Length: 407
Ligand code: GLA
Image (cartoon, rainbow, N blue to C red; front, side, top):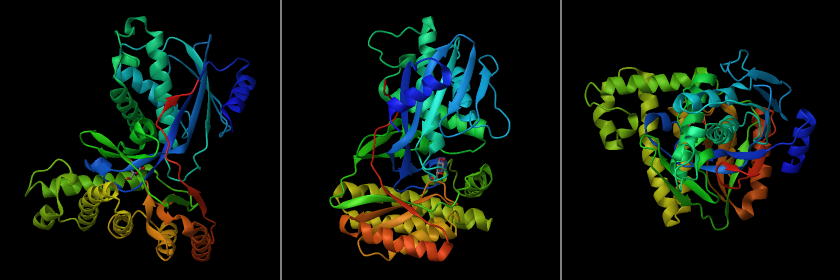
């Protein structure tokens, strides 16, 4: 769907023209899984798929929410912003607006808005459709609220709301989105997805330290190799349950390790430290989870170095090792993701393949030589269908920019 078509749909829905159009991308994580909430590093890229938001002020002091993907329509008075029941999709938007006001009490939402979303991140694929929606909302409403609040008139040279420079502004958008996910969706996620959506850069991956939020854009230069995303089409159940359990199990490991070596995060441990402290973890599940995190943090650092040096074969091996650890120690893969990865590993011309995102369904990410892509789709598709009865989908990833205002 083009922006022009979205604008027509907006006018049909609301009887007025959209004033502004924003876009925020979904993401794929190359390596560094379930490390973000453990103070570790991640290595995601923004995609060209994402969420669009169109808006115009109204005179009714209400927020009207519509989506071209969802049938439900919501109308919420601007002075009654709170979580809506029944997993209402507008919670991802309301939460961001609420959190902007809480993080910036000087900002006021004094006008109502007509709002329309459109998303083209494949649903339930674990490619961060919700983070895209959060970040696009945070982007739009920080700008609107700064404009609505005369006392926030920008200092000289400041081009971004609340006086931020661009880098700090984008990080703030990620933090607003993450807080929304915690408070309005109940998923105690790390910051990776929202950060990738906010700070993405075309043809670059983001090497992010999720403790300090320091990051580096690393060029993804893969001569003759593509990043291929394979969708299990098995609804990914990143429900708060299984995910929040992993977060808790990691906390248990931190507590038990801290009896012998005080740490704040599992990611502080090197593989050498691990040998010294693993005996302190009495809970066997917590031990497996922690072992994954310590290994994954080391793999991520090694993978970034490998990419910088052009050692793509080694990068691929680290991806595959990441999947094995997520399968055996973190236990977030399941039959569908495991079948897709195992089939990919057999294809000549595949350098590495692993699940990406939270897990429990969703997608894998693979590095595939150009000349092997057709065979990859054929063989992996057929093996996957044999193993699960489901049809997979394949996309060659286009690495795009982070959130932006389009019009
Ligand atoms: C989900 C969460 C992220 C991250 C990944 C696993 O995508 O939203 O914060 O924890 O799972 O790496």
